[in-house]
Length: 252
Ligand code: NAP
Image 1 (cartoon, rainbow, N blue to C red):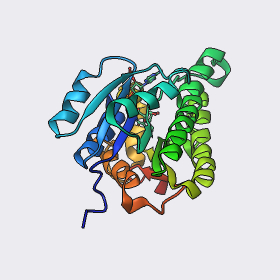
Image 2 (image 1 turned 180 degrees about the horizontal axis):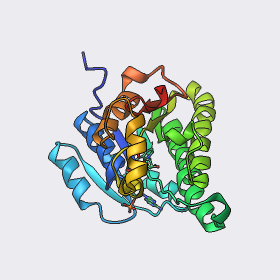
Image 3 (image 1 turned 90 degrees about the horizontal axis):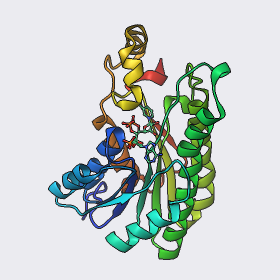
């Protein structure tokens, strides 16, 4: 009998797989047995090599996700190169920090388009493929603590991540009967490029750390297990859930 977390024979597309949380998720899924389409806007040779080092196939797919234009191509290329698409991880995301009264339309569009609009149209393209293949599938969105809270000086980011949590539930409702689960992971405060500005502000860094019951910032690797769980048979009946992986932040 296969292990309930075994992903052998599955193919996952992970956006923003070149760094941070996306890289950790791609490697966790590969370690669990999945082949990985690494969807990155720039260089991805390193992550493809790391996937191969785990004995899995890795394919680099170049795409700028600031618009939804590449959505259908990403799915088509994944199927063409790796044979199928079972799991989509909408991880790529961006942030613009600043006072709401100063926020420009570009600050709004850059964040909401990448984090929410593209995540929707890529999910739509993936679901169409999963429905056509008739094998069901898994869609995992990377949400945030700001899917639950307001945050400070990150209005467009909070709007995008709160929207992503709602979208997760809406799509879960529609696609559950088709065998596609749609869930999200809400990372707490993780040490990546995304939080470099926070961590370099000594007062903010201390304030955040003081509120985390686990007593440390998260590492990208802390997120991988949740992704494997949501991608696996073990989570077949988990639908529309936003799973916080936050060292206890929300419990405070
Ligand atoms: P990160 O290291 O900055 O990673 C962001 C990833 O998204 C990078 O691969 C980046 O590519 C990619 N990306 C951004 N804009 C893109 C675009 N237009 N087209 C293609 N790829 C694009 O930060 P991270 O923390 O790992 O972030 C990953 C996800 O976790 C994001 O959705 C973020 O909002 C979310 N998150 C992070 C935290 C945290 O504490 N770090 C907490 C909650 C949620 P490049 O390398 O080319 O820029």
